[in-house]
Image 1 (tube, rainbow, N blue to C red):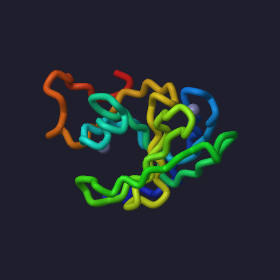
Image 2 (cartoon, rainbow, N blue to C red):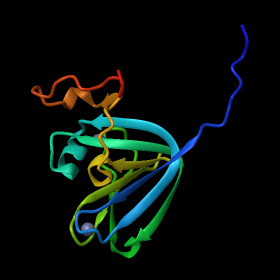
Image 3 (cartoon, rainbow, N blue to C red):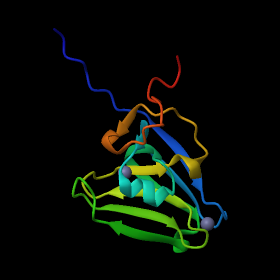
Length: 142
Ligand SMILES: [Zn+2]
Ligand SMILES: [Zn+2]
């Protein structure tokens, strides 16, 4: 059995804008793909049945514009007990990204503000999933 050598994971760059375009940001990090979150907090924050989130680790977040417009809600009443900082545009209310206190360097972007269509590879808090939502996880490319 040979040990797999650890090669540095390539970084990708993803961009995001809010509904009113006041905020424009870029995240560079290791691509961890998209997930769905069915937790009640994500349902409320997204205004929808689930949140479709894109995760980047070892990530750096830079603002092209609008950093001063971004508002932050520290969501501490979570199922895991971790504080999730939910960032959104203070002008249009568009959810932009999440920072989870338990994961250093992880930036979670909302796919809607990225206009990203990556199929999720995982679902979180499935016990709270709406019954009419079908099976959606799987490989992005078949
Ligand atoms: Zn906005
Ligand atoms: Zn959630």
